[in-house]
Image (cartoon, rainbow, N blue to C red; front, side):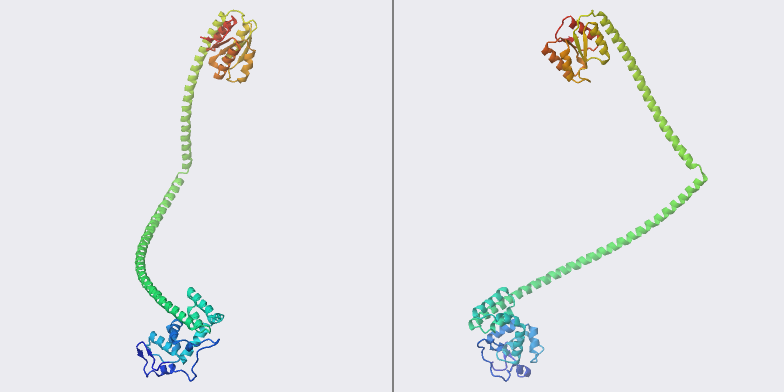
Amino acid sequence: MSGFPFHVAGGSFGAGHSLLAEAMTPPALPKAQVAVGSRRRKLWEISHKFHCPIVGVCFECDELRRLMQKVMHLPRDASDFMLHTTAVGACEERSRLAEILQKSLEKRYQLSIRQLAACKSVAELRRAWQAACRAKRDIPAVLWACWTHPCSNEQLDQEIYGDIHMIQHQLGAHDRTEQQALINAQAKNAELQARLDAALADAEDLRQKRATQAQEAAQTIAQLRAELVAREARASNLARASDTLREALPDLESRQKLAQRLADAEERARATRQENEELTRELTRLRDFAKYAEETIESLSRADEDDLAELPGPQLSGKCVLCVGGRSGSVNSYREVVEQSGGHFLHHDGGLEESLHRIDGALAAADIVICQAGCISHNAYWRVKEQCKRTGKPCMFVKNSGLGSFGRAVNALGKGNSGAGTDK
């Protein structure tokens, strides 16, 4: 170790610090030799230039101050830099402070020391150190275990020294970045705090407004409740007055029911009168229509009788006459005309009620066909016309369904007027 007092940061500790000098003085032991063989090196056996990173990396300033106070008296105004340089200087040779630091490091990093004890060569030790640097984990522990390892040599010590030197620089830059980030965060926090204070103030104003509104609403509710109580009181008074009136007029309710029944009866009577008037008008209309129908039927009957009187005697000679269509009430009269003329009568209503499939059989059995076109369906009309044309059967189409028209058609066909025709 260099001569005492120990120089640090351009100054020195004077002779007045007796306890400091005592702590820096090595005990009365033979000077330690450099570790050889498989024995791990002690702190004071490592190169002195490595003591600075060991003390700086492995000890916090508060911890270092606490350990140093065990063996020396420190001025109250001692800076962290003075503590660091003093501890580094004490590690150059075996001293009371160096032994305390050695014991603390061995106890703290015993797990890493046991793990690296498995390394049997410089290459394995180098890989362990490089792995710790890449992972950026347990660097102080691996640093102490490597520099005190029996396999470590001068070249590996220099590599580790260079790596830890750059790591300290990177940590310094990282600390500066974090410091700037902390400053920015503090500024942001101040801004957010101001915004929070403004929001709290707005919330307080809103709370006060809501409290005022709630108070006003409570007053309004109280007023409404008072009005409701007053209205309920008036309703109770009116109910009592109504009960008094009912007691004074015991038959009031029955009178009201009778009045309602009378009103209902008058309404039903008015509706009945209106219905009777409508039925009377309808009856008059139907009577007029029936009278007109009777006159029309009588006129047609006279015309048909006159027409029949003009018709000659039997001319059909047993031929079968098919009547398609016509009035349903005149079918018997049609039959009499045909039979009086010496023929046989067949009838089909032209698809009004009977199936059209039956008309084919009737057409096949008939010798003469009379089709009353105004009383049949279109399908029946075209079917009769087509089959008579195809088979060459005499067929006459008449528009009028009267008995006279039918008789004239029978007379014409009976005289041999074959083919289709139309009654004018």
